[in-house]
Structure formats: C-alpha cells, structure tokens
Length: 339
Length: 118
Image (tube, rainbow over the protein chains, first blue to last red):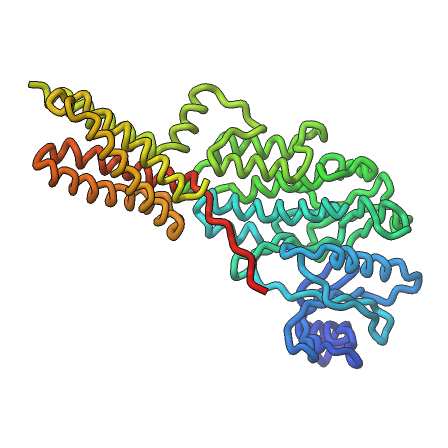
C-alpha cells in the first residue's frame, strides 16, 4: 500500500479507521482532542441540543469489562462532583462496537500555567489558586482525592472560570455505594507525562500498595513510593503546593515581582516530605493564602519584629500616612501659631 | 458594621479629636467647647457622606479621595464662617475626611441583601 500512498495519507487512513462509529447516537464526531492511557478524547456535536461537547471513548473493546468499568467509574466520579470548578458529565453509553464512552462539557481555555504567564499581579495569581483550592476542597468533602493535580489538569476559561480536569486517577476515600471503600480509577489521564505503573492485578477496584500513580514533579513522596493505603487529602495538598510554586513563579527575565518569603514558606509547608508537617486540609492552605492576601500573619511562617512592622505598615499604609500628615500639620500649626 | 453607621461613629470621634486639638491654639482656647461640638458635627456629616459613598463604590483609594473632598468642602465652609484660620481648619478637616473615607471602605460591612420577592 505504501507504494501507492505516501506516509501522511496512510496515517490519515489509520486515524479514520480508528475513529469510533457514532451512528445511532445523538453525537457527530468532530476532531481528535487528546489521547490517554486507555481512552481518547474527541470533540463532537450534540445533535439534539446543538452544542459542542467532549467525548472520552475507550480505545478498544474490552472483553473482560475491567477497562469499561474504569471509564464508567471515572464518569461516575465526575457526576458525583457537581461543582462550577469541575467539568460536568452530560451522558454515558456504549457504542455499537462495544466501546464505552462518556460525554462532558467541552472546555475552551488554556492551561493554568500558560494563563498565569500573562498575569503580572501576584494577588491575582493567588486568587486564581484559591479557586482551585475551593474545587479540590469540595472534592475532598465528597471523599474524593484527585491524585494528579498539575498545571496540565487545571484549565482557565475565557471568562476566568477555573476548571479542575482529568479525574482519571481519582480515589474515592468514602464511597456511598456498598462496594469497596477504596475504589481507584487507574491510568485514564490524557496527558503523556502521567504515569500509572502497577502490577497486572491493578484492575481490581481497591487500591493496592505498590501502585505508582501520578505525575513526577507533582506527586507526593507517599504516592511515588506507591503507598496507596497512606494516601489522604494531604497527598493532594502536596500537589497543590507544587502547583502554587508554578503559579507564583515569575515569567523568565521578568522583574515584575519576587516570590515573597511568606509565600515560599506556604509552598514549603504544603510540599513537606513528611505528611504530618503539611497542612491538614486544603481549606487550611487556602486560609493561609487568604491571610497573606489580607496582609495578616500566616501559620506557615513565624515572622520577626521587622517583618511584623513591615506587614503592619503595608496593611495600614493609607491610614498611617494620613495620620502622620495630620500630626505633622498640627505640630507645625502649634509652633507657628505661638505668639 | 454598616458603612453609614461606621462612618457616623468614626466621623464623630475623629471630628471631636480634631476639634479638641484647638486647645493647642491659645487664641481660640476660650471657645474650645463650641469648636469641639462644631467639629464633631462636621465629622458626622463627612462620615455619613463617606458611608453612603462606600455603599456605592468599592475602592479604598476612591473612598479616601471622596473623604478628602467632603472634608475639604465642609472645613472650607467652617473657615468661611470663622473668617480666618483657613489652613488650620481646612487641612486637618480634609485629612479627617480622608481617614473616615478609608475606614468606611476598609471596615464597613456591605448592606445585607434583601430576599427576592415571591
């Protein structure tokens, strides 16, 4: 065949051949978006509602049903997390060839690290980070760990909306369902830098020690060591700390701002090697960021007298200046009005 | 605290203190009580104006500028009535207005939202 067709044409034919068949559904496939460990994401048109959607489809038909179960479980995790910061799932189903898919909102925007590169204000970047914290905190309140928080998995929409994406490695800590209390969805991330190394038996629902799931550079030490049983909300806090480091890092050759010492201390506390040294909850981390933004002391940094004075001055700068001018004027009047 | 009530209280307190500083000017010391009462009233007016402004505009800088302007106008009117001491009255009066504007923006609570009618 390659004698008659060039490589590009062959590749196009391969892609066309691999495209899932959506006849009989309300969706018209548009274009390839991303590929993950076991699924591919496409954009599609919802004929009924006349809107663009994203569809994640299992790469191949699954004889044992385990991959199907994983993909459906990921869809269920997303469906369970109804929050403005989490991409909503609209539909799920099975194609004629047996492949499972689920339909979600199509998100237009950019990765958070690309988005903050154009933001020169540090407080603005931190407020963006606080919105990520809100979403993750919500997921934790529903008993779900993300386990793969990184810049590639946080999108900022055209109107500044923040969306935490790719819950493919999510872990359910407390399940409402009567099944295992520790379900795991493994290796569905559409980004190639995510690793999911596990024994052949990883398909089973409960998380097993020895599995390494996450992204190097963002996963916590306990995640990297495959200690699945010791994972809790502090695992996501570690990743959030790493994400914060990325988000507050000034652009190359930029002199817009330097990372303040207090903020570095917050990052260090969130990314502490030891679980017990980290923040106990995402809301505690967010509280420290809010305190920093309000010019208040933070739990991660014990400030000296000079730093305290500086912070006090910055916080009450306007009032201090006005009072100083007032006192100065009054003093001058007292001396000049003397007979 | 409600922005207008806060403006009222801070304005009255700072106005009274501002009036009290007239004690350091021996020439006007005999009229100190009247000055304190007048200055407190001036502070009250500036406070209410700054409070109303803070309910409509959420900006510390604009709040200070508005307070300075209101303080300036009120102090200028007082100085006109006194036929003198223009700088002694206008400069501190404007600064007091600025401080009240800052306080209402910084510490005033927004008005409670009303429930939608059914």
